[in-house]
Image (cartoon, rainbow, N blue to C red):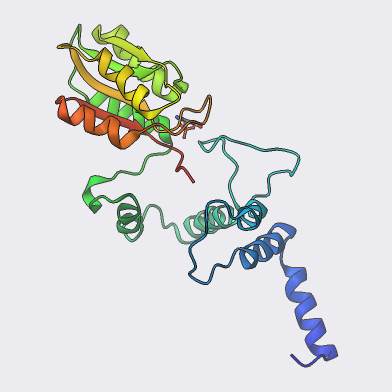
Length: 228
Ligand SMILES: Cc1ncc(COP(=O)(O)O)c(C=O)c1O
């Protein structure tokens, strides 16, 4: 671009119109351009650039991805734009175009997904939808987030179900053994986190679901976090 007083004033006024967070967001987005290339999990430089997308103070490493998790700039912008659109146009909802994209991302059909306000709300809907009677058993971990503990504890109080707990082991095989050892004729469901929030371990969720299916049990996976 030819350097001229007019161009300089134009670009300076564009930048001046942007807030600091918008400038940081633009810079960060340019830094993580991948040009369609797959990023290796151990590409430290790439992940450090992803970190730049979060306004979160650099003094903190924040591991909570739930409701209270910090959002990256593109999400903050999308939420801001969505709210402006709703407030300017009175245009609420309208998720129809988004649903197929989300369904594709999680490998489901469009009519198999529901959007909830947060993970805990989704867990409550699923938990209270499982047909359970007094004495029925549900397997959970000893590492539950309150979002997956409270709904089942409420069903314990209201319907007299029994909670059986396993502590995730250091190997997938041993974790599966521990779950299998809890299954008996009263077991109805395995309700487990994919990544317990207490220690960040990735549990063998496919195998756990297969075990549940083989035994004719409901498998409820609470997975607010996608493993890297
Ligand atoms: C394993 C797990 N379950 C449930 C939740 C609750 O998520 P939300 O705050 O979206 O209800 C969290 C939040 O971090 C979590 O880590």
